[in-house]
Amino acid sequence: MPGTSRLLDPLLPANAHCGHGISGPPAVHEVSAGGAVIVPGGTAHTFWNPRPDPARYLLIMGAQTFALIQAVHATDDRSPARMRQLYAAHGATLLA
Image (tube, rainbow, N blue to C red):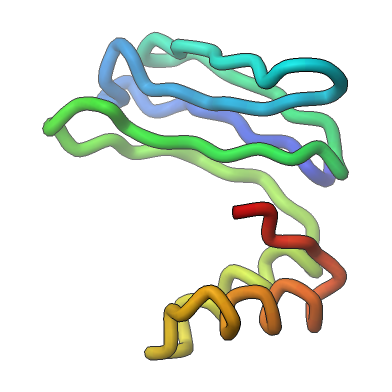
């Protein structure tokens, strides 16, 4: 399903986080190893690992999002202006 993020790896720390907001205040979910979070397509979201231990995760995304991620990884310019430009070129909006 496009727009789905799923955390699968058994090495994932016990308190990896995913934050998203569908309507109203943002929600934060702590996900244990082997757990999953599904974020509906088009929903503003982020994810992070609050622990110093490495985390491995699986993201399932559509082709347009994949192209955006590849463009972000390909540029050395990580300025907010460049990131907004890349997001816009791929039909996305950078909120921060």
